Length: 500
Ligand code: ATP
Ligand code: MG
Ligand code: MG
Ligand code: MG
Image (cartoon, rainbow, N blue to C red; front, side):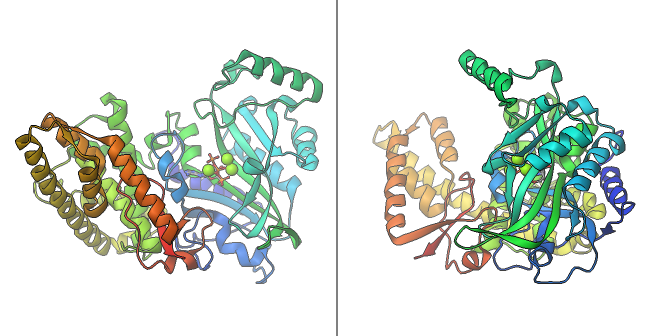
């Protein structure tokens, strides 16, 4: 690769260090904060400083932060830009500089340091943030057609239900400027195009679909952190105005390395290569489905290694459940890819350790502790994989009996009840049930299965309070969970049940 991920990280840190920032180490994936489940952004370790609960030690800092976002699990491999584990490069001002400098430096970093062409960059600002708009236009000189005002969902950043927050401004890279300004990707109806063009002529606002990542990729978010969001949702101004930014390392690597998605950068691809080798396929020749599976393995094995290294072991509660689900998804995906051997010639062995070894190899520049903890990580993964395979095999046995009974009764359909029993009690993924049944010429009553599922949901909702463990979720709640509802391996969001 012409520009390695490691060099991008270093250049970012050096850029800000030479502008007075203190380079600090990444904090753990487990935040020192009972209100947050996992570290989802670089600002978490500085939260007490932003809130004025702790004095600042330096006026401004820069980091490369390990992050983990469970809300993006479903996106992994399906978008070109989302991971569960990723590194966020950041520059932070604790009451020191504000919008003007933050915008100016972000622009210089992007166009001079990383050499991105200015006419490929778009920016978004919060809908009523005229100050940021002005800075982009007057100070930086971006044409107004490439500045998009967006609402709270996209351009008001909060780290959770409460805490420091503020309007933000994001920088996007345009892979296809030739597609023009007003007819972007997903827009289907010509009336809509005419309407947005009129709005553009009248008010200078145009509605581009910046979320379409075959054209655009958001890579840098500048948060103008100036409020504290209280329990009742009100915004209290902070004593000082701060800057909190995040630039996705994998996304910048993807742009500079000119590969079609984050997974094919040098930061992740070696893991995919290893998985391909075990699955006996060639990534670049593989069909989309196989590629998706390989990307999931590439992403999740990264996440798993760093989580365990930071002391999160598989369990049925809170953070431990996050890592358990990720492990199960990798094992299950490995089986879909027909990975049988463990990479060391042992057909009965676990394959996860040999893939994790690759992730550990890549970790030295990110987190030197991981390598030292490798033996423990690999042992844990092996145990968890073998245990899960046992569960799968128990399900397979029961399914076999059910299918034999169907055949004996000349019944071509497996009942929804049976499929649900396998899924619910034995944790057996329903897609496997369908696949195996199909091999025996038997179909699965999916309507019946869904009815059972609905039934159970209704019952558990009556008795339980479903808490989603996502960005900004409360770890104190999560950790109190007595046990978790098992949702199967392909239910992607991390959910857990709390007694109400
Ligand atoms: P997106 O809209 O693409 O989901 P975001 O707005 O949720 O991104 P931010 O919360 O603004 O992301 O995080 C700051 C930066 O971190 C992003 O601009 C991006 O470069 C990077 N980033 C965020 N989420 C991910 C992820 N799941 N995988 C990789 N990089 C990410
Ligand atoms: Mg997001
Ligand atoms: Mg965004
Ligand atoms: Mg953003």
